[in-house]
Image (cartoon, rainbow, N blue to C red; front, top):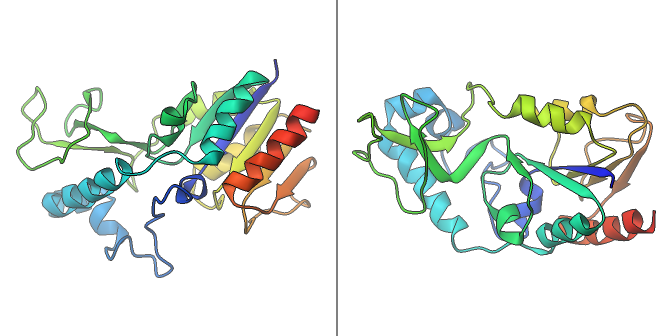
Length: 228
């Protein structure tokens, strides 16, 4: 069974109603990224950061996976599918995908501020005074700007084994995630699904661009791959 590696970004969850939350002016829901998505921002105003992620967590609990998520689950019947997602939602898992690696953390988890190995499932609001077993403030289990990406090495190992690479709903502008495309074996077929693709066929040897939203694009992908 061929290994199908799928790299997903905000575009696959947008059709479920999840905001990409970075506006054209660079603000995240009215906040500068340094205020709500950096260790320094958390240190300066932890309540603001917790409130920001509480709102996002509550929104996530109100939405459902969309056709694109389910299409990737369907592909598990014909391929060994591994998903590497830049998204912090759990929509891939809720749809039924069995192998999902989260590069940027998970919104429905929190972790200790002093021990990264202490990670808890968390579906309610997180407040100042919510402490880990080491009596330290809990924080969102999110990889903030300026922090290491602990799952990157695993993601590289997965990508290196890909027989087929699929990229869905990501600008390929956010590093280190965008660098993963460089780890596939030479002549690996690559499918790029995005209504405004940021790559061209000149960049890669075996690149197929599907200029559609994720749901329709993955419909087309299924027909192409299963026909092969």
